[in-house]
Image 1 (tube, rainbow over the protein chains, first blue to last red):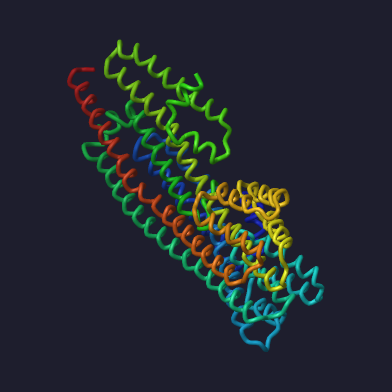
Image 2 (cartoon, helix red, strand yellow):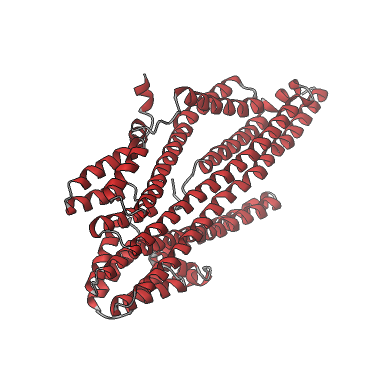
Amino acid sequence: MAKTKRKKFSTGELLAWSASYGIDYNKKDMLIETVKHGISWLIIVTLTRYIWWMSALALAGGLYYGWNIIVPYIVRRKYENAAFIERNRFINNITQILMNDSKSLLEAVADVKERSTGEFKQDLTKLLTVMMSANDEENSRAFKELSDKYHHDDRFTMFLEQLETIALEGRTPGMMESLKEVKTYHNDIKMRRMDYEQAKKYAAEDMRIIILVVLIMMIAIALGFSFERYAYGFAWTLLGTIIGNLFIALNLNSYTKFFKYYYDDDIMGVSKQ
Amino acid sequence: MKDFLRNIAEKDLYYIAEDMGVREESIDRFMKKRFMTLMVFLFLSIPAAIFKVPVGIGVIVVGVFIYRNAYTSYKKQYEGFLFQREFEFNSLMKMMIPYLKQGADQGEEGNSFYTVLGKCHRRLDKGIIKDNLERLMVDMVDQPNSILPFRRFAADSSGSDDADLIMLTIYEYQANSSDISIIDELGHLITERMMRSIDVIIKGKVSRFGTFPTVVTMYPLMIIFAYTIGVAIYEMAGFGGG
């Protein structure tokens, strides 16, 4: 049963998931998230039209949306955050260790590998194995493979390039300086990611309040005079169908757009997806 | 006809298209479509005005709005394009720096720069920068020791002055094998640009959220309005007996 449900994620996410970073996002959390969206859609439609089959459709739609769109967004976010932290830790630690002349690059990578987890640890293990065979060409290829895998994190790839040069040529003070620079750049990215996430959290808080207000408004409208007046005078009339459905469509549009923006974590570019 | 359309087009429309690498014929077709749509609306406004004057005016307004909107959305596309191009250009610059440093450390000159470009080209995603880079490499072979390919690359890949400056510096560096601190400077310059562009992205993405509260509060007003009308009708119908 678990397997059928997982098929709904993209293969990339599935693979990442299975190489798990020990993420504690289990099925129960996924279901809760899905239900939250189902109920939201249900509320929007019900409070406007009070037509039972529309409400049923809304619930189904919301559940579908929650499961197939929001949950993958969340999985992706958790995965990318975990992966980024791993890379960041790698960069910081390696730079630290290499400043101390007594350890070789090989030893440094081995040490840091132990502190990693999940998919990245596997990546490092692979790299380490190749490095130990002391074949320059294979070394380069291994580094390139790792770079390509994380090509979207260009400061990480820069760092790898520096490492590769060090592997080939040994350490010079100049190289160490560049290494430290790249480390700073990567940490800058980390900071900006966190700032961005925080800003989005604030925006979400604002939305929560607005939605609460709108909810109360809608209930007041429907029950203000008398429900009978609302239903027969509006919700179930032609006017209600046109305006009410328009209202629902607009709200759902804003709803989906909001979450799309909310789960867009990419600070390196403006993706069109 | 074509000349007429080009004359009435917004001043920068053709410039935008050229910058994006869109062919003139495409824009001519775009203008034609827009114009025709506008004509249709103007035409329809006449019977509409006969029916009810405000409706006729409304039709004209909608037509003009659509006409204008085609331009503004195209311009928006252009801004997105500019931004993406700028970002890719910065990425390329960032890519090149470690290679150049490496080259200097190992004391290579001249032709290894070509190899560097090749390496970068392989790593780039498909896009306008990649194409421009190809062109640069071809031009370098055709016109050895000429500064023109570099400047052309700067102009095509980013209209900005510091892009020109960067490419000039790079040319100097590879032509005269000067010292590495220039490359360091360049590196810093480029990182600054990248950081700034990231901040711009973040700012843009955060500001997107600003529209939601206003818009979401507006929608219920629509309901209130419609509801008031609906209830009024309902009540009156009750009194009037249907």
